[in-house]
Amino acid sequence: MYAVVRTGSKQYRVRVGDIIEVEKLPVEPGQEVTLEDVLLVEKDGAVTVGQPVVPGARVVARVLDQVKGPKLIVFKMKPKTRYRRKTGHRQRYTRLQVEAIEPGAAS
Image (tube, rainbow, N blue to C red):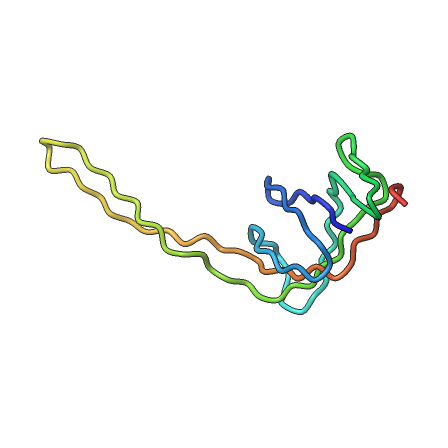
C-alpha cells in the first residue's frame, strides 16, 4: 500500500515506515501530523486517483526532527564593474516518519 501526498507545493510517494523531508511545518518533534491532501492511494493492486484529492483519505506521520538542508552558495557578479556578492542559504525541513495510511473512499 502506498499513497501520493501533497505538502509544501511538492508531491511525495509514501509507504508506512518511510522517512521523508518536507518543507518546514510549524510542529514540535514527537507530535503527529495529518496530511489531508492525498492525491492517489494504492491498496491491494487497486489504484484510486483523486479529483484532485481522494475523499476521506489521509496520511498520519510523526515528526522526528526539524533539520537544515545543505548550504547553497548564491554568487552574483557583473563583469567590468567590480560588482560581486556572495551569500549562502540553508533551507529548513521537517523530517517525518509515516505511521499510517487511511485510504478513505479507496477501500
